[in-house]
Image (cartoon, rainbow over all chains, first blue to last red; front, side, top):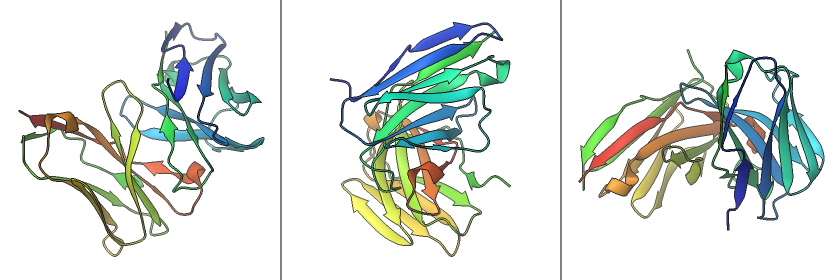
Length: 114
Length: 112
């Protein structure tokens, strides 16, 4: 029983395409996140989503948009993909949005833009 | 200067050694400090968190925070090959998960 799952695990696509990554958590958590981990392993938060409140990291281009059909899902849509979008994207969830609320991470989606 | 710095390693130690992993940071507003372990091609998992300065122990792991020096450490006693992973520090100025700042991680190899 995977707590936080992501699909696909690997995604290879051409520049300019639009793609989506799906995330589901079965922990009953109220808060979900999307992170980007670049080739130098820096993990940076992109979005957090809590009870329909979306908080966006101001450095994230508006080509990236999270969509939450329900509390258990937070999908990531990326428009007009660029080479620099190549990275591993992690979804995470936590019971609440406090820094001390343990975040549970998914296995990651490795995106390669050609 | 990056906000959070870590020696990327790799750090190789023999099984049973005491391991010391460290992060330095520049933002004196950080109050919450976390250590995550990330196995290859997996998501990070939280090991420990501390608030403000001081020590915290959990089994073989001890976290230390020295806010005056802007320096945090994770010690692993009796290291095991299963401890081989990348260790990420993370910190936040407030109690909001979306304000986390992560270090780049230190890759640790514990040799049997």
